[in-house]
Length: 255
Length: 243
Image (cartoon, rainbow over all chains, first blue to last red):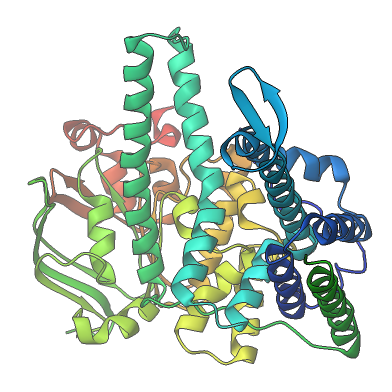
């Protein structure tokens, strides 16, 4: 079973790949916060263009990003359909008994632009460093140890659990199991899911024992391997500068 | 106590929370640099015994490592002395990269940066996996994972190696590599396994467990040649003795 890895293209060489992950995470986080607070469509559209340029600069293939964005698009599509008909305002379109408002449509587009821009920025932010280096950077940035451990174990073992699920499904198919819309299928899927939880629980027990065997007492220490250079600060200045400009644009264009 | 006595177990019993009696009044001694094969049918208590050696499980009875009783207040020292390699390397390799995994134990033991670096490199060289140092753990093959799991323990420089099924699910080459790696370690080794040929080749002594009880203990070649004894406990002669 295939699972997309956000750091699949972390071995490339770009403006962002050589950037210290700690400074990169801080700088992009500022940009993401600024985008989340943009008040109207024009600066949000500028943010979308900005995010697209940053993505191109990162050299991560756009097709790869678009594939990962399909669920975001699905949710946004839902917003674009529902919001014009639920937010009161001047009528833009009438479909029988339903009336779409301009205000609702504008709001949906604003949310869509902000969401897509923020998600796109995640790729130059976390996709240009190996995931474990990003985690080490988060730890250095004093993100609580328990959160780091949760992310790390989730990332490490999601592949193991998907393989486990895949093997169980293969074993079921080998005994002529076909997914249909009936109670038997539902019961089978329920049993498989339950078994996955039981096996997952047993596995976590064994992993915990293996950790205890090697001196684990609750907190995770990771070796520090970062060195800051002037270039890291120059790149940070650029991204934070872009964030400030975007924020000023948002304030100036606010009606 | 003899100076060579590395493990002393007296009257050890353990029952799992579901009521399964896994160990029943087990007593045994293991001496310095001995290589002991623990064999027995499934559910005999082999893995449960290993988990008692560094205090992961605590049953009734006494377990002593190098004369020191396993207690809550000395678990750190005990775990430094006894390294357990688990059967499934996926349980043992939980860090993102091979280097992080092998460094996990030394970091927890409070080694400084140089010591961590040298123990990681040394352990990876011992299992001939130094080239995999920067690799992502879940990208390794099963055989590689088994060797890295062994390295994660070697980096802590234990006196005693306790290995649970070290050759299970390995292809012949992987099995051979693990056996070669084990043969060269000059440490006390306890190997719980169904691979009787490996026990025949590596171990000087064999212990048979059945239903949580120690039922036979003696020189490996003697025990492994006793067809009647092996068959009584759902075991068979090693392939090398069946010809």
